[in-house]
Image (cartoon, rainbow, N blue to C red):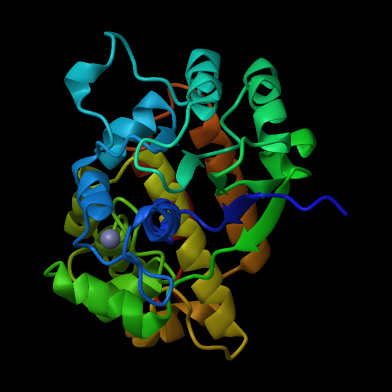
Length: 316
Ligand SMILES: [Zn+2]
């Protein structure tokens, strides 16, 4: 079996994959590591923290580099930042890989996400991945293992990144000043490294209240339409509500909304699993189509009413 020097770390979005890749790079580039961890104080660690370590190459799409703060906005050309790793960038990595170590130690190339690569770009990377120059380690990442080209994947050693444990996830949220760490951690299933792990939670709670007929239905409905999140967030929120309603209906504890047990209990007997799933699938398909925006008032209202009709209470 091929002894792959490249490690491909895969895990769900929001589980801190990029941080995990950086940690591995840091441990190798640290000039005084202890127990496999970077010291945070040596010259190597300082260069890494400053983003100027000459023996580290970070290969990622422009859009992601900007999101992660790896590159400053002014460093890139005008136009929409790309979500794909460009072949030119791969070629720069290949050129860089042949140089010798600046600091006399290990050299590390980070590539993420490995699935965001066209076939020519992947081919350009392949040979270096197959036979990396001595001293060069590859740490690759992906959230979509099934989309990584098999030729690339076969050159790597797979490693699954575990989700953070609930306690660790809540601690991190608390550190960030989150007011309801338990609820948010449950809502994102501990994927607290996501850009907005709480996205859709408040809306979902409002939606449950509206379905249960709390307060003034008309005002609640207007508030939901006004506060409707981006389509992808709304679709994900509705899916989570659907899963929890089905779970509660079958006597299981809610997964995403454990704090809303009482509301879910009241709604679950009226939930129609098949109809809910069908509506949700239609919404998911519609949201995937370009130009569809849930918060475009009218469509949000229509979708809300459709979901509301699945929860007709006996007194209606
Ligand atoms: Zn160090």
